[in-house]
Amino acid sequence: MGNLFKIALRNLLRYKRRTLLTASLITLGVVFVMAFVSVSGSFKSMMIGQVTDSMIGHLQVHRKGFVASIETLPLNLNLKEDAIDRLEVILAAQPEIASYSPRVKFGAIFSNFTETSSIRVTAIEPEKEFRTVPLLPGRVREGSKDLKQGGILIPELLARGMKVKSGDLVVLVATNADGSVNGKQLIVTGVLESATGPGGRDGYVHQADAMEVLRMEDRQVSEYAIRLKDFGKLATFGEQLDGLLSKELNKDGKPLFELHTWEKLSPFFNIAQMIDLMTFFVKLMLIAIVLISIMNVMIMAVYERIREIGTIAAIGTFPGKILTLFLIEGFCMGVGGALIGNLVGIALIKVLNWFEISYNFGQQQGLILQASVEPTEVVVVSVTVIVVSVIASFQPAFKASRMEPIKALRHT
Image: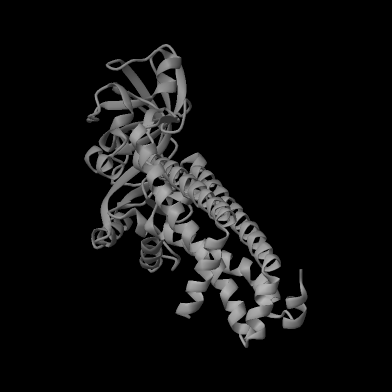
C-alpha cells in the first residue's frame, strides 16, 4: 500500500498544473463553506441569544392549556399555590438549571389620564427575572433599570405614542379572574425598547403590584421562565424535565404542567431553520464542486495514461491494484484540498473577527460579528470532501482497471 501511495503522489506531481487547479477549486469550496458556516452560525447564535436572554428564557413551564390560549392571557389558567410549590421543588432539584423566574401575564388598559391604550403586562420578581433573562435590563433606554414595587417599565412604542416619559404617573386598569375591574396608579420607572423591532406592547411591573391590581388573595403564576447553565444541553434536558413534569397530575388524573422550549414559543426559530437550510445547500454546492473537479481530472488522467495503464497491466498488475491506485490519487487530492482549505478558512475567520464587523438586529445597534466554527464542523466538512473525492474517482478508476492490456498498448 505504501508503494501505491508513492506512485499516486508521483503521478499527481507529474501533472502539476492540473493537480494545482483541482486542489485550488477544492480549497476555495472548503474556504467558502467554512466562512459561510462561521458567519451564519455567529448570526444564528446572536439571534437566539437576543431572543432567549432578553425576554423568553431557554424554556418555559405553564399550566396545561395555557399556551393554546396565550393570546387572551387567561387568568383562570394560572398555576395556583399547590402547583407552584410542586413545580419549584422539581426545578430546584435540577443541577442543569442556572435560574428560573415566575411571571404573571395579563392584559390591561394603560392611561396617562388623557389617553388610554391596551398593554400586555408581565409581572415579575426583578431579581429572579434579571438572572433568567440577563439582557432585559439592557433594553431600558430611558430611566432606571431597577424595577421596584409601584413602578412600571413601559414599551417604547407606547411611550412615544402617548408622550409618556420616565417619572410620569400613570394608571393601570385590569379585569381580574372573577370579572371585576380594578386599577392602580404607578410611576413609569423606565422606557423599554423591543427586543425584536420597533413594535411591541409588553410592559413589566412588580408581582406585588400585579397581585393588587388583579386582587389575588393567594400567589399565582402564569409561567416559569428557565435559564440553563449550558444552552447546548437544551434538547436533552428538555426531554428529561418534560418526563418529570408529565408525572405531575391534577385532580382529574391529567398532566398538570406543559413544557416548551424557546423554539416553540418564538417565530425566530423559523429564521434559525432557514439559516440551517441555507447552510445545508451551501454544503451541497461544495460536494458538487469537489465531485465535478475530481471526476474531470481523473477522467483526463485515465485518458492520457492509457498506454501506461496497459503497460502495468501487461506486467501482471492486478485490476484491483490499478483501481486502488487511482482511488488513492483522488483521496490525496481531497486530503490536500481539505487541509489547505481548513487552514485558509480559519485564517479568514480570524481576519473577519479582527475587522470587528458590526451589524444591527432589531433594535440592537452595533452588534459585533464573532465568527467561529466548531471543530466538529471542520471535521464534517473535511470528511465530506475526502469521501466525495474518493467517490468521484471510482468511475474513472474502475474504467482503468478493466482495460485490456493489448488494446491499451496499441492506443496512440
